[in-house]
Image (cartoon, rainbow, N blue to C red; front, side):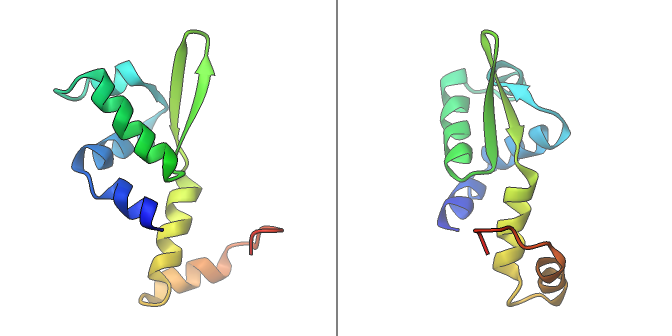
Length: 101
């Protein structure tokens, strides 16, 4: 959970998640939306990947980044469930995964 909050604490990382929510993108495509160098974008992507909310796939000479929506929402709903009835209902309605719950 700490990794998720660390990942979400940064405004550029939240913006990256917004872009990836629309479609998978390469580092270059993501960087086109920022006034920062690609190595900085790569560092932000590494934090998101470490948190488990972004996946990378090698596509030829490029690496494509994809938002792991279920991982992100699952952790956030899990955090909110004790405080929010709607989140609790969502968590309870989700099918249990073998070996994980």
